[in-house]
Image 1: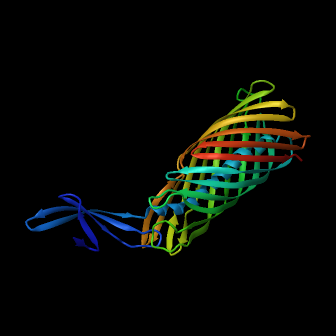
Image 2: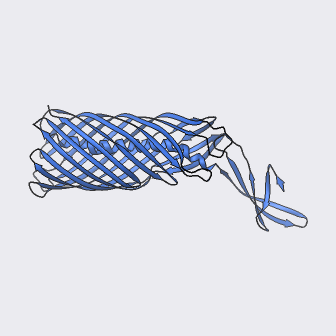
Image 3: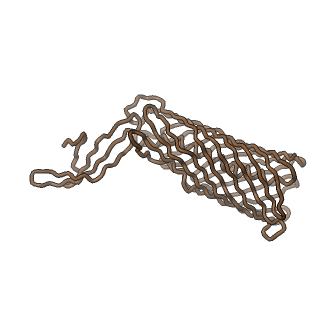
Length: 375
């Protein structure tokens, strides 16, 4: 039976469903699914409206991969600041202003439901720091600039196509303020510290894929978008360093990291989409062992676990009103291993070389090199 532009197909003696096309865009192909309850009375069939659901083509969620890669990359920059940037403050022991810099590079794989994204890139930071003493406590503060740039590739499996590839690039530039307080050097709480940092900047992201194989009525052509978005965030942390003997030391630490990026509208061929704001809340705890091989050489090894509590990428197709696209979640647990070497050259230069490995929701390797010069 034909009804209102759709067809009623009896699923049973008493229920059926009408599928009526609401509108058909080149990329999203939105359909309206309407449920009815059917009953008969004499020679008449009575249809009672139950509910209406709007459904987008399953391939629509792939367009959020560029957004997800950008968020992941900015979060990597936040980890770099919290780890390597804060590590530079630890080196400041004398008076005066100390300039410092660091660079990281590597590849990471982020797993998502039905897909994954590989990110290759680098990050750099440069800044100055200074030590202040208040009684038995030491306060170290600094300011810095940060920059990162990288490429990504994402892969999705859909009913109509497998390993659908998309690619693009991301870069960010920002500034930050960081500080650390080492408490009670001559009291029972010696070794306890608290730290924190605030950062703000702008990220540029671009995304490209092909319409080939996605099962829609659109010629084979490039689907792409780009945007600039403000990000800001902070982290707070605490730890305790314990000296076992003159050579060996242990450090336990934990931190909470927050990041927010503003929402953006993008255009995909003749369609429009809106990315909602993204909030990231991460908790990390870990332990690190240190060994002083020589007066100017220190080796260290560590492990940590991290949980992303949010990181959901939400988007909407725009056509008269907003139609939700299936979201992508960056949440999950990641295990982290670290191995490094600190080397002092005379009284002015200090070099720190390290590598990190990731397993779990995030997989891959990152290497970094830090350099400090004491004036």
